[in-house]
Amino acid sequence: MPRAASPARAPRSQRNVRNVRHARREQLGLGKAEYRTLARLDTPEKIQAFVDRIPQNFEIGGQTCLSVREVLRQNRALCIEGAVVAACALWINGDPPLLLDLKAARDSDHVVAIYRRGRCWGAISKTNSPVLRWRDPVYRSLRELAMSYFHEYTNRRYQKTLRSYSRAFDLRRLDPETWITNPKHCWDLGWALEAAHHYPIISHRQEKSLRLRDGIEREAQALKIFRKPALAAASRGKRP
Image 1: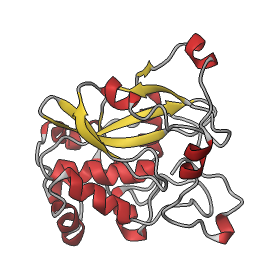
Image 2: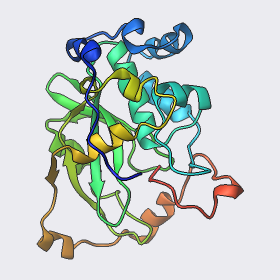
Image 3: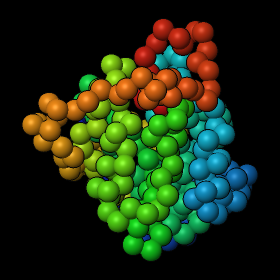
Image 4: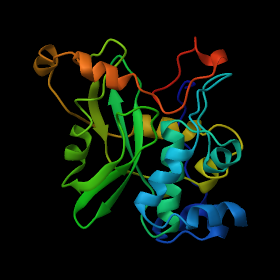
C-alpha cells in the first residue's frame, strides 16, 4: 500500500450518515441494481456466502484496495475488499458497518467485517484458504474474537504471526465516496485502519516459545478455493 497520508475526514455534507442505522441508497450513492444486490443479503450468513462466491483478487498488475462498487463491477476481492462489501451489506440491513484489523509480524494484515448478536461478536471474512474464515457470533469480546484466529494465522514459514487487533472501526466515520463508490483505490481507508489503536495479543516472551504449524496443518493451509492465474504465480500479493 502506498505511503500513508492523513486519513480523510468526511465532508460536512456527509457527516449525518454517522448515526444512520439503515443506510438508504441515496445516502450511499449506489445504483438501484447495486443496492438491490446488497439489500437481499439480509443475514450475516447470506453475506458470507455472497463474499465467498466472489473470485479471489490476485492483484494482477499491482496492489489494489477496491471500493464496494468496484468489487461488484470487477467481480474480484481480497480480504479488505470483501470486508467492505460485507460491512456495506450489514449497514443496509440495519447493522453498523464495522471492520476489525488483525495486524501481523513478518506477514500481511487481515481485515474482517464484524457484527454483534446479543452481547457476542462474529465475523465475516474473505479468504482463499481454509483459514481466517467466518466466525459465529459467540465471542464475548473483540479480544476473544481476535484470539480465535491466532493459531491458524501463519506465514509461509509456518510461523504464527498475529500480534495485535484494532478497535472496532466504524466506516460511518468516512465519506461513503471513500469506500463505497470510489472509482479509484481506497487508500484512505487502509491508512485509517493502520492508524487505528491496536491492542497487543501476546508478549515478547510468549512470542519466543511459539510452535510452528505441524505437517497436517501445513497441508490444509495449502488448499485454495480459487487458483492463481499463471501470470500472477510469481507475484506476492496481500493475504487473501
